Image 1 (spheres, one colour):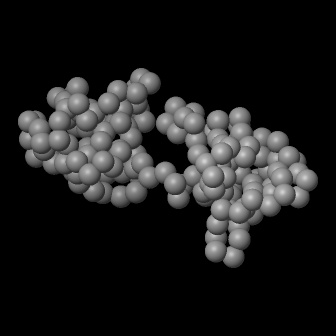
Image 2 (image 1 turned 45 degrees about the horizontal axis):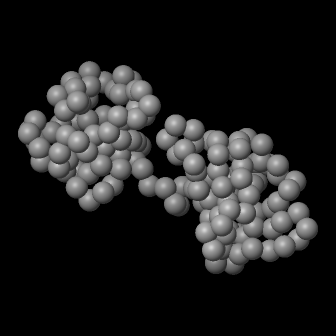
Length: 155
C-alpha cells in the first residue's frame, strides 16, 4: 500500500498527497471510518474537494514515515478525550457537573441529560457534554470502583 502513494507536509504544515505517477494534491486530510471501534483500520485520505484519494484498510500496512503523518493528521482532526476516572458529580439529577480525569488531564463538564451517555459496542460509552464535546470511556469495566458506581447511577 505504501508504494502506491506518498504523503509529505508542505511549508505550511498541510498534508500533500502524491500519487504513484507523480500527481501532486495539496491540502488533503485523513479521516477514520470507525474512530472508536477500529481506530487503526479503514482510513481515507480525502482531497480538498471532499473526494477520497485513497482508502487505507490497515494503517500498519504503511511505511513508518507515512503512518506517522497519517496519525498526526488524524490527531489534529479528532478531539475525543478518554475518561480514565470519574472523580465526582454535583448530583444524580441532570443537569449536573462531572469532575473527571482524562488522557488529556483533569477537567469538568456539564451533563444535560442521561440520554447524553450513549452505549457503544460493549463495554464502551460516549458522553456528550453541554458544549457538544464527546468524551470516550473505552472500557467502563476497567474504571475504578468509584467511577463505576457513579456511572451506574446514570445508566
